[in-house]
Structures are given as structure tokens and as C-alpha cells.
Length: 140
Length: 83
Image 1 (tube, rainbow over the protein chains, first blue to last red):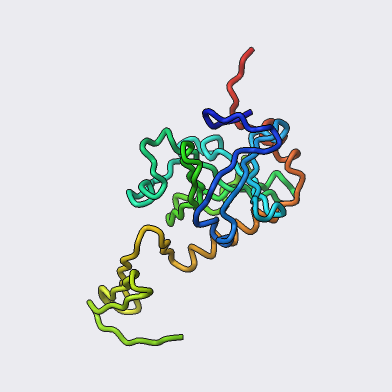
Image 2: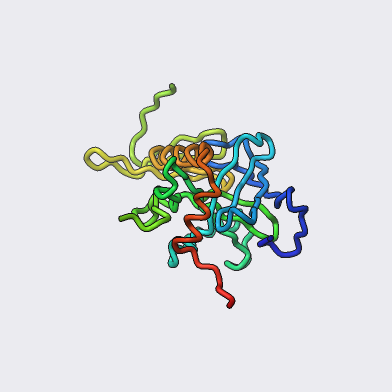
């Protein structure tokens, strides 16, 4: 199962993405493989090429919060070389605690990836509208 | 740490390409302007650290993710239903 056009990666190789700035707190890791294992749906996995011990669980935030949008500054859009919003793949990182019912996703630091260049940046959204720990499952 | 005294509208240059300008002072707050090339990311420290901490927590996830995915599928996450 692949989400990017014109890609036929071997299923175990994932899709190679470059984050020129790394992720916040992980500036040294710039190359990642994105996996979408069948039994992991709707979660995806981003594994660092330089350090395969480091991998992030992520999700399409639109499946968690329907109206989620990333306001991109022109500078960010330029850095990403995004020509249209359709070229962007947005993922947010997921924290799964011991009790997975309380898993959260970070809406304040989305990863925005240009699906044509396969280059991505972690964007910082500084607003109460974008919680750091947004519960993925309804909490009672 | 280098300590420099600046007045409003004065600035410092870092590395020849980043300029930090004191725009104004009011009470406890100092308004700073930062001119930097696109390749330099500028964040408020506490925001940067909060996101870096969440990133580390996400990387440290060791819980069985298959269980989490199953919960999500059961709960809500919409997949087009073809029947």
C-alpha cells in the first residue's frame, strides 16, 4: 500500500524521505523511510535511515481532526517547493503510552512533506488551536 | 556567554547572516526582530523544547502499535466502506 504517486518500493523498503533540518530534537537524522504496514493501518512509521533504532509512529491528522489544517508561511512553502496544497503530505507524530487508549498526536509540530520532491520539514505551530497532545481516541 | 548591551532599534549580527534587532521594550517584555535566511529556523525556546520533547516521546514509543492500530480502526478512523 503506497500513498505516493509513481512509487513502487519493495514493501520492506518503504518510501525514502529527506528532512534537511531533521526533526526537532533530532537534527542529525535527515533521511527516513516511511512504512505503512498493512496491520498497522491507520498508523504509519517513519524510521531513521542513519539510526534504525529511532522510529516514529505517525498518522494522517485529518483522520483524527477533520478540520486540521497547517497554515504554511510563504517561506516555508518556498523551502518545501510546494506548488499546490495537493503536493503536500501532512503527518503528525503519535505517542502511544502503555495504555494505548490514551495515545495522543502532536498537532503543534506536523511534518509537511512535498510528495514530488520527497522532502519534508517539521513545522512549528505556536497556538492553542494546535495542541501538543491531542487525544486520538474519544476520552471518557 | 557573550553579553552585549543594546538599545531599541540597535541590533546584533550573528554569523554574518542573522540579525537580531531590539524593536522595543515595554515593562518586562523585549520585542525582538529576527532577520535570518530561510535555512535558519527560529523558535521560541519553550515551544521548541516542548515539540522536541514530544518528538522524543514519540520515538520512545515501545507499546504494541498493532494494538493501537486495532483500537483506532475499531473506534473511529474512517476508511471508505465498500460493501
